[in-house]
Length: 278
Image 1 (cartoon, rainbow, N blue to C red):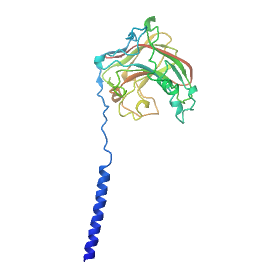
Image 2 (tube, rainbow, N blue to C red):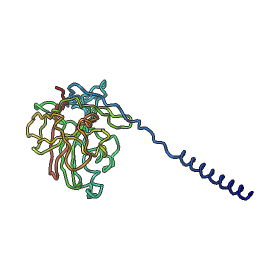
Image 3 (cartoon, rainbow, N blue to C red):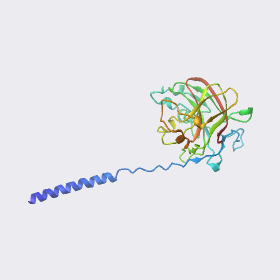
Image 4 (cartoon, rainbow, N blue to C red):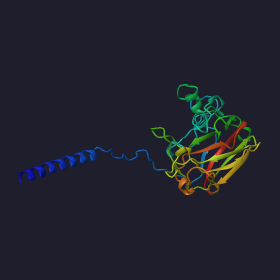
């Protein structure tokens, strides 16, 4: 009888140790931390002059700065920038690893300046070009070329709507109640795509996903181009499929990007960029 009781006691102690061990393991598992960088989008309901490109630099130097026209009271201004495929060239299987053959855009992209050329930050700011629409003032202009060092080579320029957060992430804007986008364009007669990058969580690949856009031909003389927001579509056969209205509720910028590859040269100018409400 004593042997049975002793055996039961040993078994009980053993089970108790197992349960204690399991409890410790469970209590040591990491607890998910809620995201802190989830700003509520600013809602736009009236026409916004994103940029007329005419703002003179605050230091008094000749020519405009790279900030847009959104006032501080509305969370602005954002800034202009360029981008290219130079980092994609380094990623197999669609890049050939030869960055000297990557696509090139002027004004120079941040990645080429800091990553490839190993130059210090901050990188040079976007430079406006002269003349703009009406043969006066300034415009946002990119030139360069597109290669196939990255299979889907590209270059482009964009403008953030608002100032960035403390961690340099972009702030979103809800433009779902707006009517459309209009701007003046001049260029080389090639196809370009105006894009609306969105922070909507449905875009699983984030900035690299298939964001809504619309193709247009860059006219050889200044011409106003306008699109209804309902005309924007995703490209076929790649990326995450997202509802347009959901995407429009968290837009953070407008981009202008090349279409197709290669291009021995590209040249696109944009002026008087607006998101309008009718």
